[in-house]
Image: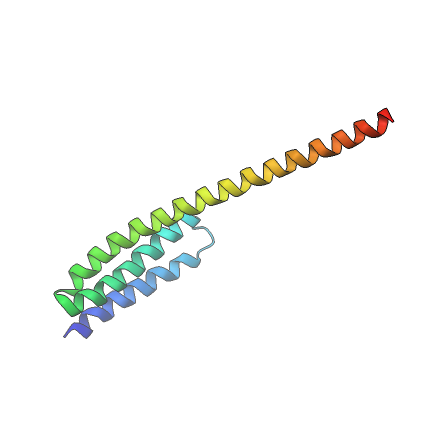
Length: 107
């Protein structure tokens, strides 16, 4: 009986995860969608063993969406930190080039 409940949820989760390959979807949307689909699938699987696969899928989807959103926010923060580090390196390099040019002209 639970196998028949898991199959539609699994099909829905895999179908939605196929949308993640869309070039027009943002990285944030993709992370949230994959988190929700994966959470629904995991929730349905766990729910089928305990009580209700449908309730498990809903809870799993909610947790997955939140997890996907948090992962996306982490990725954004990491990207911004890397951009700041690169800007600092570029600025230090330019200062070094300018100091080298000044020291060459004063000699």
